[in-house]
Length: 367
Ligand SMILES: Nc1nc2c(ncn2[C@@H]2O[C@H](COP(=O)(O)OP(=O)(O)OP(=O)(O)O)[C@@H](O)[C@H]2O)c(=O)[nH]1
Ligand SMILES: [Zn+2]
Image (tube, rainbow, N blue to C red; front, side, top):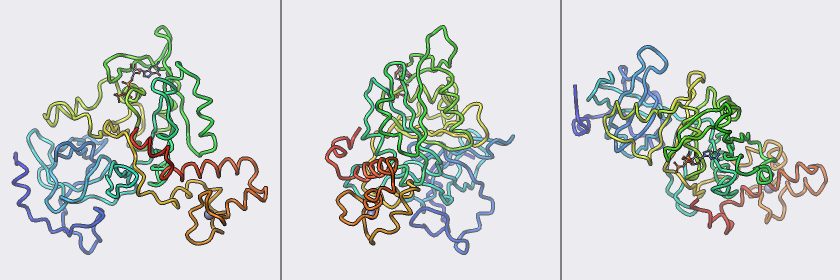
């Protein structure tokens, strides 16, 4: 049943291409009654790897090609897609991807702050795990703020994971984040003779991570789909390996696709060990920056549930930035009602809002 892409290109798909790449309305939906729904775990050179019948005896990996009508619709890890044709997952078979199911969340980025072209990174994720090292390399608040903004904008929960706490105490720098609603996990290596989790890093070396932080992180991930980002060298691979087993699932994916080494730049969804069904972590080796050209300040405000009701009194079109002469948030602080915490929260909110225009942010645009 081997077919190549060209064969599939000739198929006529009755779906009307939908601008947003979401599910067509019911009346337009074609009768792909035989279609099965799978979760995309990686995308590589026009081949979509999906997992079907997850957590059942029939679980299998299926490789698919996108129907021509979906050519302009990006399909990304985390997407649920409808597949037809040969969905057996047998070697050398190719299914046809005919529909992208409606997405609950969509993490996007622009190449830089002025680029209006959005790139879809991952779909249907619940959480963004931002990995930074306490030192070596130095943590950059610009990077963290941008990632937090991108997460808030997408309606995704940010989680800050600080590695290498054995090298330097991260507490002073974490002061910046105490007034944001984000969970923080602090990870470290432990002495070779102490108990811990041995995990291989990208450079092939093995580090023994203290067990408790890894278990805390596993709990934060439980039952959710999380996407992880971080600079090179922060220990992201070490952590992901500790959570997903020493042998990364890339090996398995490659065994199925027979396409050689997984290209290091494409995102890949991995199942988290010792976690409930549906717990996935999506590694994004290629993503080092978040242009924020598309961010809507109102979405950031939604992440500050104490500020949102106050800002309801703002004039229409108020950006809530410090430069606004009549922002209700300033009146709230000035009245003393906000208290010290409220003031700190407003400062944090405005620091995030400023990310799309400060010079510092521009300089950190590529991080
Ligand atoms: N001291 C210390 N070293 C760590 C810790 N976590 C990871 N490392 C080391 O830091 C180095 C980089 O770790 P990696 O996991 O390869 O980093 P990465 O973020 O995946 O880097 P890329 O693969 O380049 O993106 C390795 O030598 C690890 O052993 C930690 O908590 N403490
Ligand atoms: Zn305002």
